[in-house]
Image (tube, one colour):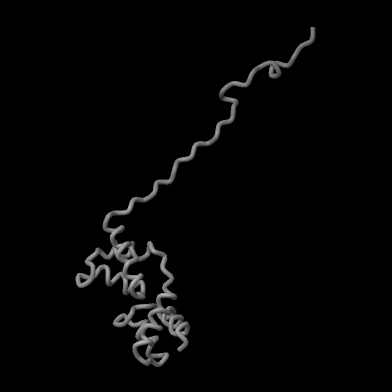
Length: 132
């Protein structure tokens, strides 16, 4: 009689069978109604006219504007992933279609907090894209 090794005749047990690791799904953050409405309002404003990020947040959160909280307005604006350079270019072209500007004057208008509120770099990009 020949001897067989014990492991050759033993069937694998449940603990020896590999199992796939379980993954915990990452929860999707829920947005509030205020955030959703601010996002919709921001999109609507951008479909009508060019805005800077700061100008659009101001429009949405101002009591003279839409009256959203600054947090909801900021969420709404940032959730759109807008190309602010393109908005600056549209704004520069719009200004030039209404009135003559020097390059420096239009950059100042676009970048001023009393003007459009674009960053200086965005204003330079916009003015350059507008051909000035």
